[in-house]
Amino acid sequence: MQDSTWDDTPIAAAAQRAAQVRTPNALKLPRPERPRIMTIANQKGGVGKTTSSVNLAAGLAICGLRVLVIDLDPQGNASTALGVEHRAGTVSSYELLLGEATAEDAMQSCELSENLFCIPATIDLAGSEIELVSMVRREYRLADAINEDFLTEHDLDYVLIDCPPSLGLLTINAMTAVNEVIIPIQCEYYALEGVGQLLNNISMISTHLNPELHISAILLTMYDGRTKLAEQVTSEVRNHFGEVVLTTVIPRSVKVSEAPGYGQTVLEYDPGSRGAMAYLDAARELNNRGDYPATEESSPIGQAPE
Image 1: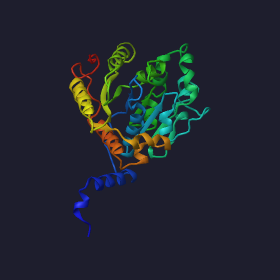
Image 2: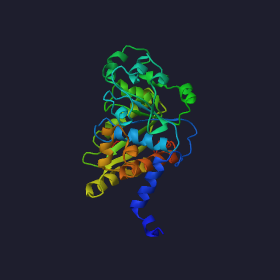
Image 3: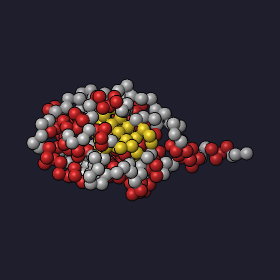
Image 4: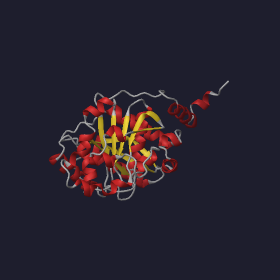
């Protein structure tokens, strides 16, 4: 007879959830009314931008939603984490932006889930901004490529775009192609450094290039519950930005850091780990709360921290 107290322990709960992650169709989320297209953006490096892109995508896909990740960073870290081919010469986001391939041509399926797809980045992307300068609709090349017909044909629920930590034509293409921006902020010193400039950039793009663009969520990453600093940063961010900040916080985790080295998301590498469970919870929260309303009172745009 199994001891009922064992079923109530955190270890047992983690094991049960890990088993659900590994079992196809064990977890389900309601599909959004229309495809949600978003970018995870922060011009500051090392805040968990790519990590959040691939693990949120994995969490949504595991829960039965059809998700496409578009890697717009020449380093190709999102492609590596999703285990897709991205050697030089692979059809990628570079060919997509230059009009040499369609989104369907560049899209690859991922091993983690039949619902997860990726358009990879190759090193060719490094020189693309120079090539884009002289092109027609240079700011809208990606938006034109992932149009409504493409989204409908592939029955996609989410498109997540991972862009480089800079405001060049690649990032501008990402922000003109999406409606939503998710900002990861790390729970460490200088957490809000550069966020004011990021909000100004998003505001300028919203004003001049994409009026639908708004911030739908802020995700706190690298939280270390052992430190008072993490609590202070969390409190500061929540006080400043309010309800747009996700309730779920991503803990600092060795497993999250190790996973890309094996060409996997943390949900595939160690689905029972704290990091995996946090990203799964964040994906659920993101889906269940819907597209956060971009009212003048609720939008963080223009509320730059001092």
